Amino acid sequence: MGKITTKDGAQIFYKDWGSGQPIVFSHGWPLSADAWDGQMMFLGQQGYRVIAHDRRGHGRSDQTWTGNTMDQYADDLAELFEKLDLRNVVMVGHSTGGGEVARYIGRHGTGRVTKAILTSAVPPIMLKTAANPGGLPKEVFDGLRKSTYDNRAQFFMDLSLPFYGFNRDGAKVSEGTRQFFWLQGMMAGVKGAYDCIEQFSETDFTEDLKKMTIPTLFIHGDDDQIVPIGAASRHAVEIAPNATLKVYPGAPHGLPVTHQDQYNADLLAFIKG
Image 1 (cartoon, rainbow, N blue to C red):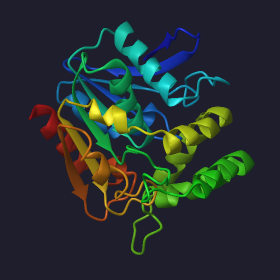
Image 2: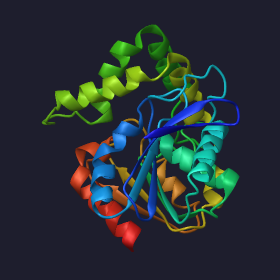
Image 3: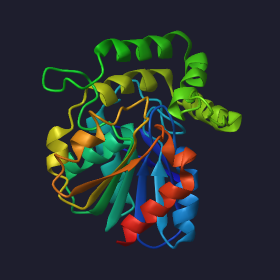
Image 4: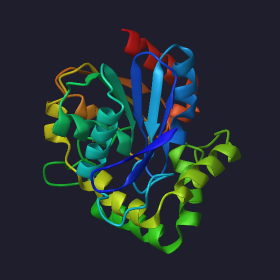
């Protein structure tokens, strides 16, 4: 574990375990690198070098007042790649992290990247617009901002239910998973968490997806209540030139946790394939 200092002086925390081909993970909102523990343990045991960072404003990275933008997130990741001299990388992103992966490739190319896996990811754009009629209305994200500002401790606890599909009839609720989600969310700075909502909801990743010429796998649950699959992965896979989509029937947004064994197996198969 360590930290890098970016060009604007922010310290970015990262975990770097194992050896072999590097796999770099980008987490969702409002979480941290710890959200990837199940995947990093598994792939590390399979002989890969597994790396995950806390996005600025989140986890153990600096809580910067400015710079909480998708472009800066991608540039921070590029600095991590350079400082660790990572090559032949497999990039894995969940939710907002999927947008971060797309924006990294859009801004920095595929010279260091060999494959990408976007899971429950926000591209091409979450916001409902004239060009994206299947998106979510701005009022939805205004509500997220208000809840984050007013009482994020209660909001993050409430959000854990639909995030993992625990609000569905017959769901087996894991209180530990809910509390782990809450703990990661509360480690984030309120300013970074607030600013990030605009970034994951209003950023248009269409041009980034067009540059994703490497083999790309989209994985998405068809019962995702946070990033509905219709305007997200089903659309994104038509834009990225070398992409395939794997749908998990009935799976929620947080499927790397709820479907951990299946998801890990699919990651390994795609990485090896």
